[in-house]
Length: 314
Length: 283
Image 1 (cartoon, rainbow over the protein chains, first blue to last red):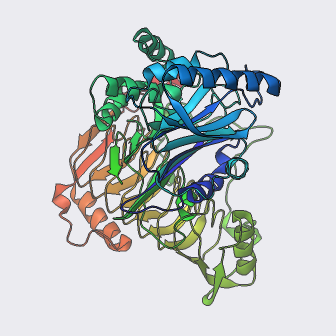
Image 2: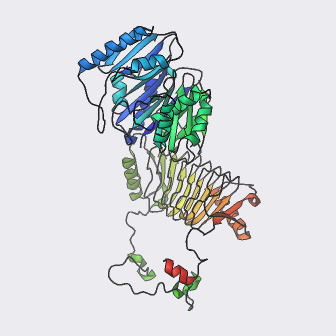
Image 3: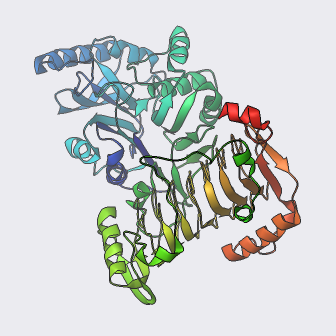
């Protein structure tokens, strides 16, 4: 089933880590195999923040295996070497869990493709996100479990999207969890509720164009699809509008960039979404109770219609 | 029901239907008015509308809240005001007796489903599948509603003063749905009976695969679904809509002449257009 939630503060920052945790926890009955956060924090915008994993947390149906921590250590060393070789410099590093790390990186290039390919050439290593504001955190368990594990409740920022997952199309592991980074674009992330029925056709076509897939989760296609459109010059909103016909199936998805948040709903309107809009806050989720966790007072909400695409700026 | 007293065979009887003798276990029941006093509707309560109370469900889950509503009805309360519903799912379901039920706020999914008789006012919004399988009564929503609004309702009046999502009245089997604003795609999808009035615009595939029933659309139509066709408005249609809008407390001054009436073309299945012998064969 899965549940998605997102919010954007316009003209101010807030404790988006805690707010999104509340929204996703309210949706935990829609799935708690894994939970993911894409948080856009307040930063000075100078350095890149890279969230990556050097191993998996494995649940039911996953093709991945649990490995010894020594393997993670070895991979981390190679990551460090590769980062140095490409001319980037690690300013700060945090190892939150044996398999999950956060680096602040000084890197002058704007194109992250070479950098990402170099780092991900190491087997078992996956960049979860890279950007000057974006941080993707995802792991097994419900929203509170993941929030507590990664200390997300203090994170201050402008906007965030998240996902509570009931695994259906692929295994229970981090690589199949949402959000997906819009590789190789800085600060682009996607969450999705639904099923895409032309996943393999699109995947083959995009792989032939050089795009990268890390999982077999159909939702990853949306991130890659939009990234490919943007690589060819389309704006985010244009790419999202094209996705209504380019992607087949039932879906509601959110996409976020450094300064914007968007939603798209398929032409059948088969997946739920409730939306609240005001001058200073937009909040949306699969169910109204997600919005109620941040806005308990009586508010006006509505269901976006079929085929609707909307984008908001911070 | 006029044909019950006639000696002539109905069309169905002339085709050989309803003449078989049922033996063994059967679901067929006949209501005898002389035995009305023995009639018992399980799960109902005698309530007094003048007996009023409030219930704050802020800290309750939906099961506890519904049990508490049932408990209040068993004490004879006929007017119950629910405070702080805060988008919770499945509130006010399965109420089978007369009751004035007022929600001071919004409901989540499956609100007031499977009801038979209460008058419900929701001073907020409702999520997906509001009043699903409603059998009788009246439900008024002051704001917007989600998708599958009034799915499979059998009777009663279901009114949303705002806009509704997709598949409104899906599988509707009776009753009336009235919408003051717009409606999404697949409105009246596979509806079988009953009527829907939308004062605003509707999305694509209106009345797709509808078996029967009538849709009245006041605004623009995104597209017609399979087998949905326009039909001329009659005076009785106009009179009925005027009456219903008054009951629904919406559409004051609305120009009914703008309404488009949509019905089933009855081309997808073997309807009355078939010859009796063909129909018998199809059955």
